Amino acid sequence: MILACQNINKSFGENIILKDASFHIEEREKAALIGNNGAGKTTLLRIIIRELPADSGEIVLAKDKTIGYLAQYQDISTEQTIYEELLSTKQHILDLESQIRSLEEQMSHASQEELEPLMKLYSSLNHSFETENGYAYKSEVIGVLKGLGFTEEDFSKKISTLSGGQKTRVALGKLLLNQPDILLLDEPTNHLDMDSIRWLETYLLNYPGAVFIVSHDRYFLDKVVTKIVEIDQADVHTYLGNYSDYSEKKARIRDAQYKAYLNQQQEIRHQKAVIAKLKSFNREKSVRRAQSREKMLEKIQLIDKPNMEEERIRIQLEPRITSGNDVLTVEDLAKSFPGQPLFSQISFQIKRGERVALIGNNGTGKTTMLKIINGLLEPDAGSVTLGSKVQIGYYDQEHHVLHPEKTIFQEISDSYPTLTETQIRNMLAAFLFTGEDVFKLISSLSGGERGRVSLAKLMLSEANFLILDEPTNHLDIASKEILEEALNSYTGTVFYVSHDRYFINQTATRILDLTNHSVVNYIGDYDYYLEKCEELTEKYAPAAASEESLRETSQTKISWQNQKKELARQRKLENELKKTEEEIEKLESRDQEIDETLVLPEVCTDVAKCLKLSKEKEQIAEKLEELYERWEELAQ
Image (tube, rainbow, N blue to C red; front, side, top):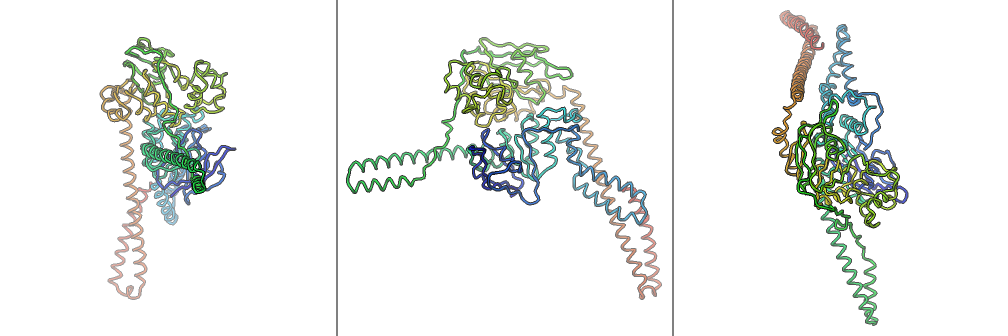
């Protein structure tokens, strides 16, 4: 066991966040912490790293183990470049390398007497350098940077010029390179594109330490974790398995609890009816029996009614009018910005009733395409044609449709005056606004909160063609599931951009992958896309279309091969240096042994033995001279 939380309690005023929370994390275990927004996940992480005190309880970290924490929001302020910032995690290796170079300089001018201690120190430092993976530290840093979606052009950007999302990626990269014994990651997949998320999944699966992740990315959790720790109404429960396993077990437990609750309620009603009947007889014996049953009823430990899926708020989406069968036709669409070509000759159609996901790495032009379709941007070439009776409902990440001076409740009620207060509150509750929250001013909301208001407003729009840009950002798992159900029962058409692979799997009937400046069509969900991606990309959007891309790949391959050769050469030289040092030590020991033998009375009087030993001593001297010269060459 590397980490244990024992009976942790935490409240803010009357709001109980954690109640006797207990769980543990084993060494090398990959676990997730889940719960609705506001459940206390980040609070628990901050208690674990002792940034926030618990009201009571104990956090136990195994002896000599290190802990690393990635917060959701980073405020790194430095004039270092991205590459320098990540390289700083290898400072101990850089210092070792500097010491080794300094020793080499000293040894080249040292006398015979000074050489021996320098050689021992040099050998020790080299061993440490190799143990610390010193020959590959640059490759490791570059690998993490590229894995997290930074290009070589990004390496020289100063940290002070980066966006919040880029700073979070830099912080994540530093944390991964530091390799603490346990990683605490708060929403690590935010700000990552799909390729980077897949890279992170592989990295964490092979990570030598333990990992404890807060995430709403269910696909990511299915791939990485083997344990789920859930915060539910201040109580903490542990489930073995990934997210899908947890979801099934949770449903079974909830069903069993609900059945037990119903059975108990039925038994209570039965007992109360029997008691009333016994009392109605109005005889001493029957009254005593009634009193006995009443006492039994009082001792029953009541089962709380569990929150059932059936009682969860559901959103009903229905278009006001039905569109024609051809909803959207895109022909030969092209768009580029100065120095940044996005796509060209893009053509596709969307039919009524389809739910189409547009995916692709960051910077490929997904949001730009949605803006062109919605008439907010002009294409460089090509055309966008909407079908008969198509009415668009658009959700963008900038939330231009909101009025800062209104409250959340006013924003909805003014747009939809026929809705009752209960209907408005139910819709807002589905998007995490309850109680007095609905009277907050739009101007006071965070970006994520504004996104949720925009989404709630869109769900009421009665449009027949929904265009959504990252609709699941800032939603907790329960809200994502509500949105999934709403879209799956929607009889209109949906076209959306998302990095949420679980959401895509649950809702998409078709996927368009924007890659290599082209679009590839997949008639299926995300799992189908993964299965066919390599085959169809090569067929319909080959990277070979870009000579620069080919040249880059080729140069990277050559560079890697050269690096491997250089590493192999260095290892060979190090091994030879080690063998040379061992041979020198062996011969010097033998030379010392001969000197000690020659002064023995029984030897110094034996001329033949003396001559033999003297000849061996001469041979040792000659051999040592050769070895000293070779050692100097290798040490250089």
